Length: 371
Image (cartoon, rainbow, N blue to C red; front, side, top):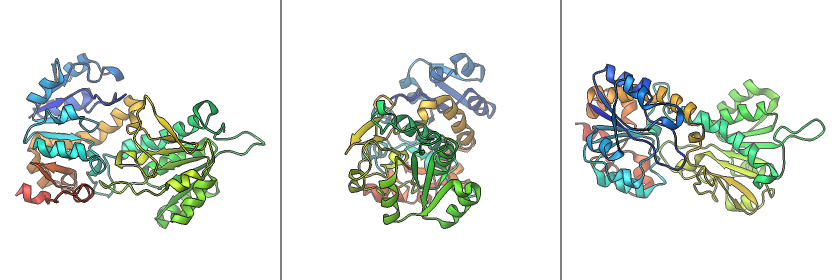
């Protein structure tokens, strides 16, 4: 198979879908890899390294899309990239379709086979291709929140960990999954006072065993979320329903009654966000204000630490990329039900139920396309 690697074009997106080591994995299996010149240059991955791993270089993105049987990316394809996809071509990347009807329509129109990292499951449960970026985003959420609590950034002017004689900031984390757990580790490490909310008492019990009286664990309900948010200096939203739009757990009314200069970081923004007042921002203009509350809603947070993120992502994605190249998409999905869960759009149909429900499309079971 000819695998194509284009340079990412989303605002301040420097991650890359394949490292030279991943290219070598594919070429060792007898596949060809076509890499757009400069695809990894911004994070220190040179064209020479890709060539040494067995790749061929392409002068422009159009050549990559025109020749490749499978396109491997990081972020969802932008409109000009969607227009270059063709029927039967495999697209393997993050998609986050539920809150993005324009992208979904473009992918359906293309006829391409679109496999989303974020809905591929793992043998032990969970979402192993989403997890590494959730780890990065959870840790970054605390860094970003601490920075924007500074007065010059619009915040209250609070040091997250306080100093002797002055209380630490109160950090509220909604959701105790991968994002929430990594945010919790960072916030505790920086000396903040931390409250974490989740619907799973078992998960809260696990965190309590690890962190003890250094954190507050609270069962998540409309009342407990409101109570915590109104007392918070920094709120981190890390709620996920796989493939579906994020629930709006923090309402506009709650935001209007928060402390002026408090900060909210919406890590769920890729799936539409879990704050009612959220809309996606970029690394160029990462924040906006609503009722005196700073909103940080960058849709590709891990792109800011692109080198770390790229290697972490490739560790998770390369095995499935090799399987798709070795077997073709139909056989690879027949052989691996977890990979099959990644199929969101194929041959003009929506094949992931939560996406179909969110966007009003007829759901077509993937098995009908694999027969």
